[in-house]
Image 1 (tube, rainbow, N blue to C red):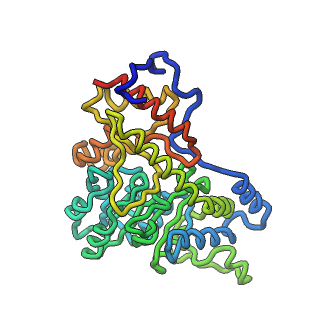
Image 2 (cartoon, helix red, strand yellow):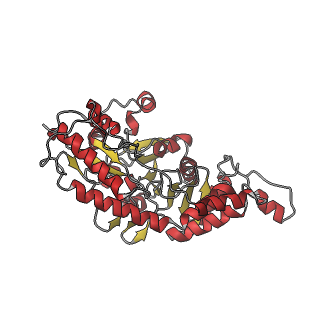
Image 3 (cartoon, rainbow, N blue to C red):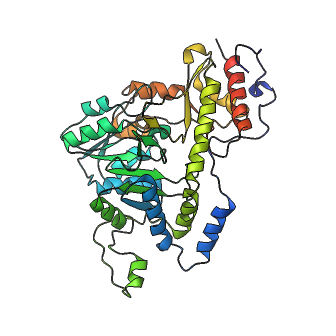
Length: 403
């Protein structure tokens, strides 16, 4: 149905019948019997944590993204913290990142005593703008932390060139972008360190979990110590060597990922290609359905980029609508379409306003996008009829509120 061809349907918000009888979430994990059996096998083994499955998962993951090293962490946030530690971020250092992201992308800098410096985003991809980044470099800048928003890689080549010219480290937050490709290279093999998340709504889940990939052996060694209290060996290594001695060589954290989680990750990794293929099919259907729908703009994809489609964020054409994003969001939710919003710009959170004095208006592109953004359901378990329900609801709601 097109908005121009149909009469206005009664919204569920106004006592009409919802498009769906059950709620369709914006994201959801996919777990099968093979995954369950992999976890059961570990539960019946000698090692529940810091055992063989951790190394197996790291090795398989590194191979999948064409990196030399992969280091598993208990969450994507822990992995970001590990990466900022390995990069040597400390008090007085600045790290340039995007405001249009989850707070963890900036918080990890604060954990190390550094200062996150925000640079506005591009109008098309909503990824950090390399020109804005270049304008914010100071003698205190130590690293760049781009985010692959929604699974679309950031402009990595110009960012890496800027980093090389200024002696900086690039920590890529690819928590949305497992399986994405940039200029025919796998995300995870391009930046100095790349961080992934295994939260249930991501392409691969370990329940909670994360990973840092790198080609730098020194970074990898530091990351492994940092996630294990700063200790230079783990329990399995000591058992193999019939040793009890261990030495803490740096101040680390308990950010270890369990064997139970890694067994699930290994099983999920086998299905990653199928997951990506399905998400790309759904994205193509979303593109096609939205092409003729007034009141909405589909996400932009740059040349030489193959996104991973963690999210499918659309922007509302507020000039064509008689209400704001909040009303559209609520109307879609009552139709049982689990739309979401990604993200409240980090600098607008109460903590950042209070600590750094942000008032709003500092990053106009990110702030304007936030007022327009709605994430449509996107996960590999979606059926075509689910996608059809999404567009029926979008059409119904946008038609109702069209000027």
